[in-house]
Image 1 (cartoon, rainbow, N blue to C red):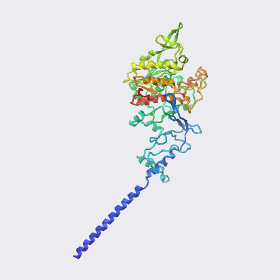
Image 2 (tube, one colour; image 1 turned 90 degrees about the horizontal axis):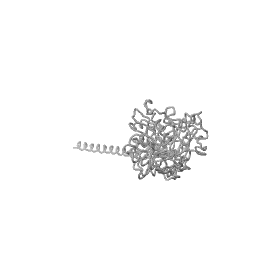
Image 3 (cartoon, one colour; image 1 turned 45 degrees about the vertical axis):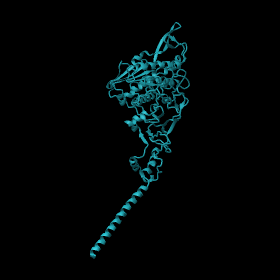
Length: 529
C-alpha cells in the first residue's frame, strides 16, 4: 500500500514539473516576440538616409513661373528647365529623370546624375508621415540598404530612372491612365544627351531651309532638349509603334511652311524604324524643295503614306479685278481648291497662322473677298475668323469622324529681336532656350482657333505648341537656312521656321502622345489643350 502511494506522489510531481517548464517556455517565447515588436523597423530606419547621397547634386536651373493661358493672360504653372553644365563645358554628363510618384509638400523635379556638389535638394520623402527618423545609417552598408529597399513593398518609393529606363517605360494600363490625364502643355525643357531622335546625315528628307547643321551651324545644343510634362511621364517617340499605328493609313499635313517643317520632321523620325530605305519613296518622284507644294511619301512595308499639301490660309487664294487691274485676293468664304486631296485621310493635321502676319493680310486693304465683293478694308482678326469658319464648315461637311482623326496645330511663335524679318530682326546669337517668356502674350489667333473649334460638330484635337515652343529661341535657322556660299543678305534671318532635328520633333511627340490615347478630344464643353 505504501509503494502505490509513493508511485502516485512521484507521478504528480512529474506532471507539475512538466507544466512549469512548458509555461516558462511559452512565457519566454511571448516575451521575445514582444521585445522584437517593440523595436523600430530596420527598413524604416534606413530608407531616407540611403536616398540622400544619391541626389547630392544641385543643378543649374533656368526657371519661369508663368505660361500661356487660353484667356490671354499668363498662368502660373512653374515652368522650369533643368540642366547640368560642367565648368569644362563638356556635354558628357549623363542625365537622369526624377519623378516623384507620391507628392506631398514639394513637387517632383528633374535631378541630373553627374559630377558636382550640392545640398541634396532632391530628397525622397516617405508616403507615411509618422515614419520615425533614421537612426542606424552607420551600421548598414549600401548593398544591404538596396536589398532592404527592394523588399520594403509597403512604402511608395520615388522612381529614379536613367535615360535608358525612361525610354523603355510606359507600356500597359498605367501608361494609358497617365496619358489620358496628362496636360502636355505644362512642363519643362530638359537637356538630354540621348537626343536628337535622328541626325542630318541619317535623314534625306530635310530641305535646305531647315538643314541647319549641313548649312554650317556649329553648336549642337539646340538638338539636345527634350520636353517633359510636369504631371506625367511623356512617352519617348517610338517610330516602330507609330508606323504600326498608321499602318494602311494616310497621315496628312495641310498648311503653311511651318507645317511642312513638322511634316519633314515626321518623315525623319519614322525613317529610324525603316529597315530598307529604298522602300520609302515620293509617289510622284519629287524631291523636297521650297518650290513644289504637294508631296506624298509611301512606306511600302506599312502600306501607309505621309503627305503634305501646301495651303497658306486653308481658304482659296484668288484674283479679282480692282480698278481695271486683276489683283491677288483671299476668298475667305471659299475653301482652298486643293481640299479634294485632303478627303479620305485617316489622320489630318491642319494649321494656318504664319502668312496672316504678311503685310497684305495685316493691312487688309482691297484684299479680302467674299463672293464677288472685295472689302476695301477688313481687320485681319475678323478675316482670320471668317476663314476659319469656312474651314470648319468644310470639315463638318466632308470629314467622317468615325474614319478621320482631326488635329489643328496652333501658332508656333517667332523670335525676332531688333526688328522684323525684313528690317534687321535677328536670333543668330541664341544658342540656349530663353529663361523666361512672361513678356509674351497669348496670341489672339490661338483664341480665335479655340472659339471656332468649340462650334464644330467634328471632334478636333488642338496641338497647342505655343507655350512649348516659346522658350526655344535657339531652335531657328537664323542665318543657317541656306548653304554656305549661296547668295543671301546677312540682314535677313529666319527666326520663324525651325532647324531639323529640333523643336518640330517635339510637336510630333505630342501628336504621337495623342494618337496613342484612345480618348478623342471634342471641344464642345471644354477646350482640352
